[in-house]
Image 1 (cartoon, rainbow, N blue to C red):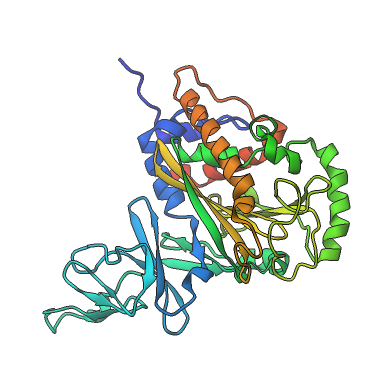
Image 2: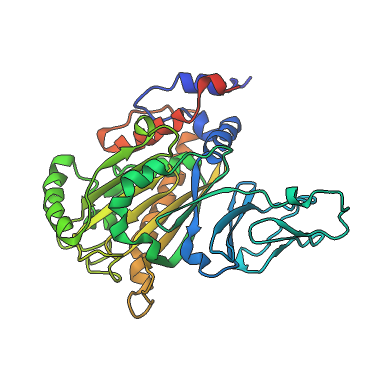
Length: 405
């Protein structure tokens, strides 16, 4: 007889600090159900960028698991998040992934909704029914430096602390004045936590990512990196770039705030940006005065890391599909005035992170195959995996033992 799977509460209480998670965290359907309820439907998710909603009536769909959200700009310029579920009998209202419209009309029975979600028309609806209560259900949205975030939580966490701590740091990059140069989705046959853990450590970089390791010294011990960071800080100041270190993830997170973090570190000498040769890739972002030879790691929530160079930004989205399947979406951002072919070469822009993500897909899927084995037991993190441990600790904090059935 097969050994019964441990209860979720037992998994939480028996986790050994400083170690990877037990097998069931990556393989069990009940655990994935808890992830859905306590992580995915409570955290903030990067849905898109304001450049995708340039005109009134512009919209796009954000979809995760069973949920679909219409993100749109109304005639007054306000951005809305609306559940893509007709208030009549539940049909999806928007079918096309993006477009421009004056109203949203359900393709089933033609109920029509205004851009703010209020009900515009419902044929043959009895007059005694209150139409004001039949608008599309609002979904919480927040625009943070041009990026549109969505939360399915009934009481979403607040961005107040992020604005307080990160606004002075991020403003020079002018992220609200960027646009999407390209986006790609990479399916991964693995549990979502393995994707996030992999992103959060560079212990594997020298072996798995030789191209990345030629320009980014994040695989080096701290004493080797410190002199490079000190030299970069002088250049950063001259370029108008802040080098603050902020870690507000897990136990360091302020009350009723999402996880967030920021860190700027030096690239190797001779590298202006994350390119194959070290040369510039695109026009400088925002109000930056020059290249400091650095890169910034930014986290807004645990599923939305970003890497900000002086001339472009790379945005990651970790997308859960089911307990065994996930996806990584990468979005490359450039200055809003930059033109492909004139100001940047798309292949050169994509080279590093496309190559790196393809390699990550392979190693993560092999990691999942090993975790599936009866011989898997959680091993200890090493010092270079401190951020992966930080993610695991933050993930476990998402669950309160006394609230788990």
